[in-house]
Image (cartoon, rainbow, N blue to C red; front, side):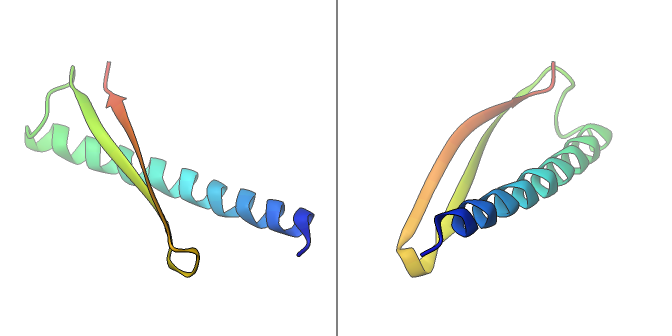
Length: 68
């Protein structure tokens, strides 16, 4: 195994996930605010799941998205 290649590949994957996730969350928040489903002062519980079936890896990361 090439450690450098692995590290680079993981970083590219995480960058893709980070950028794409942020766009999706921002769109969903704007839509929910416009529809009145959430208020502008809310804190939204969030869970991110990382899954790599070939490694039998499934990890949840719990957090919060604060709108203020």
